[in-house]
Length: 519
Image 1 (tube, one colour):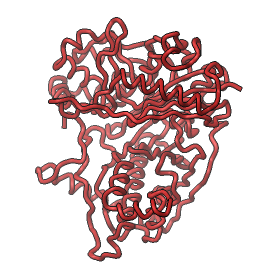
Image 2: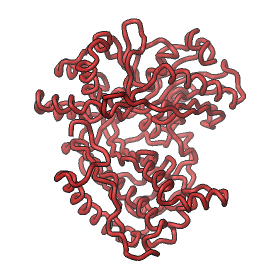
Image 3: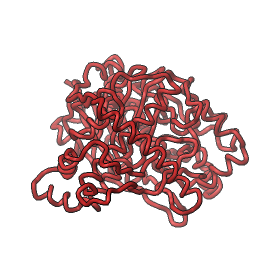
Image 4: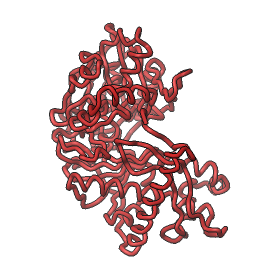
């Protein structure tokens, strides 16, 4: 039997994961990394390619050792990563500038582009499914305006996953699923739309060849072998963006299928035909890792990070109690929250808004309608209200996707850390009125990438084959119609309250939890 290696360059950490051909995880190496700020540059989130590559190499060696295999038994290696992050290179292939996914330094450039090129964002969205919010054009414009000595040297651009593949093979390449998040892309053609860069005065000759996920682009070089411990000549296979690879790892590979990925940020994704976009520009559209499909995507900002904040601030006593009992803090909080009635006594959390990609701004974090009753306003009720709120936002985003695309999924696949409990999946099912399935492998991004690696060397005929034959299910949660009626009212109240909270931003009374560059 051969083995497959996935390198996952996530927002908070780098990982290397080894799978066997049946999708079983055998070894993992993982280390956290941080993305540095920059003095005098508000919103900067730099990606350190030098230390990042050293970390990736350590993770690879750890994964191989933990799996108990030899490097030459690895049949293929691929990579997946946080999306939107870009790496720029000079003519000699040296990294000269890189930023992580939610780098938001280019606010002034976004504003300038909207003024100087009126209507161009809407024009580009119709072709790419992306706005300027996290796109590459404003960041490249920032570099041109603020670091012209670096901008003049830029000869190549990659995403962060294809940076990993470049480090392994020396080949510059990119795939549609992650390249599409630059916004310099054509959804229908699944290729760069270089004319977009030219139109706003940015270099248009820096974009590498596009390879579909699962295609071999090269092999591990001698230099990369010495640094990483991989065998020289190991096939290097094109990967893709983390959410789209995660979807493949959950079996979401056919039109109309749907997943909710519950991590630090929640993504609600539905597979749609390539080239379709949202007329309202509220939803983001990305190329899928499956040729011929795109994904409509809603994003719930900070959903998982809010729960961490809650655990470590308002629920410190419960967290410490769980530690004494030797149980997970979130499992303990869910058990307490399960005793709270559906609807959490009418508490309305104000954190992430539903997706409004054209005007992406979130109200000041708040809890509204708190009961003047210590028993009803306890930690358990607040915790349940946050779980309900994240699921409500997901439901609103899925309704918006159905409205423009016509996609009506038969069920939701729920994965990520949020799906590990017993309460949150049931809440999601009750709110949406759809069955919710949770997979055995809940951290699916690396598994989806393994399907790409395996298809590149003939272990699977395609990513779709790996996804449909190897993804296995853990539990299914069925909706409760009585609970759904309560949640329909809660959803209505949340929508009304959120609009009022946005009005407070407009008059300068409160400050946003987050806003897109240029707003």
